[in-house]
Image 1 (cartoon, rainbow, N blue to C red):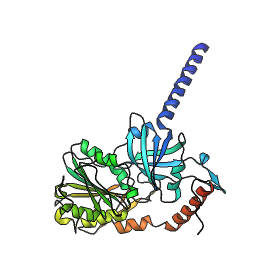
Image 2 (cartoon, rainbow, N blue to C red):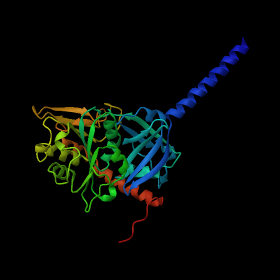
Image 3 (cartoon, rainbow, N blue to C red):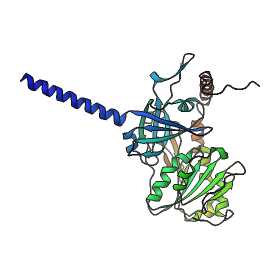
Image 4 (cartoon, rainbow, N blue to C red):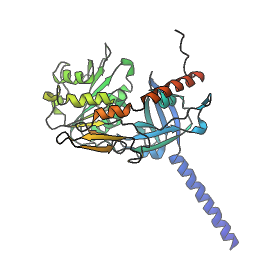
Length: 354
């Protein structure tokens, strides 16, 4: 009897170790590499098989480093707050996922200092996947970092049999990244840049415009950029992802300068970048976003971390702008202090004396 008990105990221990090893392999996230894409944008590639396997286009992750592994400068632990980061791409077979970060000061500036092999806290994927229709014509409007979100969405749309017209907009020429991924996500791309001379398209069906994204859409629709692979009037839905001001401008233009060129009854969607904290879907209410019914004027509220894709005609962009700036003083102070810490660690060059 004692021999049997020892044998069962040994078997239980082996099974427990196997279960723990499998759980660690699937759920413990670690950094594979950090690539700088532009002077202000970095890509962090993470190995996290379960998180990669469950990703669908449009969802996002929550990323943090561990306090125990954080660098310390003058009593300050460089531990990140939870960052809401869109999944740019995933490799489900290799268990890899990519997140792209715009360095805006504060915790986002710490991502570049992550090292290959470093374990990180990764939650997700969370948020609702973007609806991927089949057989429609879809206009994608990406502003700056918003283009990282649209890689996987555009490719999924094309795989489902939809046509994609993609307006990719940037403030400066140096801000553009992942050109091939954008081309794969669209049947035709209109490259927009506020800064002259702008971009030169590499494919015959693509176009370019120097100016903002709304101006580019109007010029394209009016035929000022040449022949159109996909007319604006053919688009059944529009998905805008970018800053709150960019999405508000697109939402407004649909009823003004772009109205004569758009299909009546088309559906406009914006991926709303509300401030977030828990990202656990309807828990802390930090991401609460007011909607205003355009017909009745009634105000309702949604949790953006539960569903970030929201009807452009209902989003209260004034309230969104106020929420995004509610902690601006603290954020500026934090950005300055983290910048100082990174310079003390020689992870950034010292500023030259005036």
